[in-house]
Image (cartoon, rainbow, N blue to C red; front, side):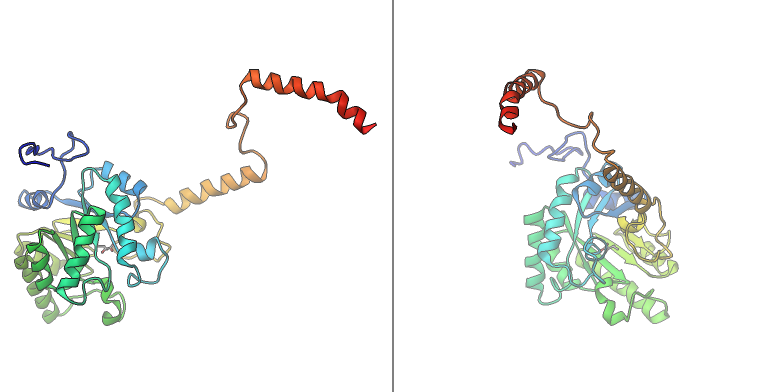
Length: 307
Ligand code: KIV
């Protein structure tokens, strides 16, 4: 697009001029104005559409998809190609929210150059508007920022560190650890991160970080004082087949809803109650009459053959 026809107004979505696209600067402005930021994960077109149409500000294609979509034990095995596949589906659905892609384990843990190359794939091949990386990786955040890729940092209980942490445990519970996470948060901000996810840390520590940073914090299991909140979609609607975490409020029971629908469908098929005549396609009446006439013409011949 030439800058001579760049819309320039707040309504800059290429898909719908009535929609004000959420951008990283727009989220920073929400923090300045004290407006809470809503975020949810999504992994496919249908749920991403519902999430976006509800007015959620940020959609994260989280590597949690390894667990809630692919049924794996943790997030470690999901690949860049798998994440790209889901990010593309989400991108097609979302018109308003900021679309953030999670960089999977191993895709940025080697060199900065490798992390940068993988992040570029998320922007170029899947339409991500920002990437999320776990841990205190200021030099990578700096390189991505220099390459014009908006970055979401992620500190605290970082699921890709499950083996180092010895399980999914609340982090930053000691004075030293609380101090360290505050230092890390500031370093990520200084390196250019535009947002910071804080997961599984005491409310008090999250509140301090939120007050100290100028970029928005998005909490998950980090208390109500963050600038925004995120939940895993499947946890929120009871589709994750896992014990409920303390912070994961359930807003609906989709498992129950789907189970009931599936049971009714199966029973209807077993009792030949589905499909009905109204749910069937029919021949045009002229064709039906022709076929009937043909059958009647052939009937005497058939009877003769049988005799
Ligand atoms: O992968 C994910 O869903 C996440 C959120 C929990 C923040 O990283």
